Length: 296
Ligand SMILES: C[S@@+](CC[C@H](N)C(=O)[O-])C[C@H]1O[C@@H](n2cnc3c(N)ncnc32)[C@H](O)[C@@H]1O
Image 1 (cartoon, helix red, strand yellow):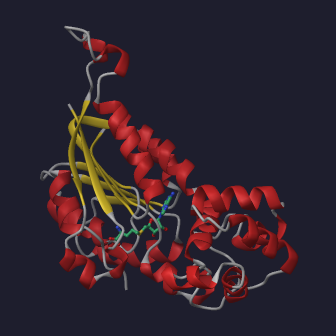
Image 2 (tube, protein in one colour; image 1 turned 180 degrees about the horizontal axis):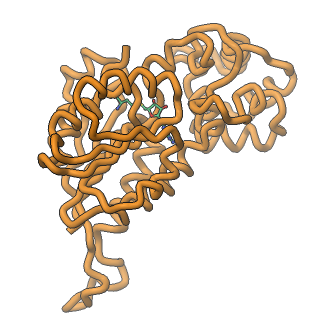
């Protein structure tokens, strides 16, 4: 079961009308898309996902609500394939709870499974290949950049020494044995390294950055984009891009009159965190944040 995060807030801020054209970039188990479809009775929904199980499940739910939708079984980096301007776009990033919970997907350091972590199981690169073939320098780089792990060097060296590493729990054990005792007590010692490997396998940050820039160009006047992120790396990308497109370039800020072509075409609408209640009810919401922008 997947409990959608910041569901009511994101739907409210998308400002949907009866005839809105919407893209849900991350269909997942259809929590957001179901709500959207109930509102846009005379509109249309395009929904991306690259996980066949999620798509099958969500399709069943959406069918019961309406027929005015199309599921696109692709990475949302192909967002321009929608090929029309739209009124609202949603990104609810990361993996869904079923992806985390299924033993065989290899995302979780709590369950023993083959190293995998592919959201799109048609792709070749998986966690096994990253862990067992990447050279030391490349492992250190991804652990530092994508995991912000301060023991990246010792963990990467230990991984190389222990190869071949077959399963998630083997990897988790190696990580645990190569960080100081007191560090293990803070949070699970494998959390950051698993995050880094997942981001590398799915190229998550590059894909999001490119897709968000394309999405901004696809909005109608008064159209909105809502982004739900789950860690600071994703949030930094969103914050930077939203700031760039909603502000006057720094070198022109002192001009008495800003020329029209430099006036921002977007305005920031919201930047919110989940309530304590939502965090209490759903642990996944803990690090989430919703940012919303509007095309003027
Ligand atoms: C957090 S879940 C979305 C949950 C959904 N909003 C709901 O309420 O049920 C994220 C989903 O997006 C998908 N996803 C993540 N990155 C993607 C990408 N680059 N392209 C397509 N789908 C992606 C994942 O497979 C997963 O099913």
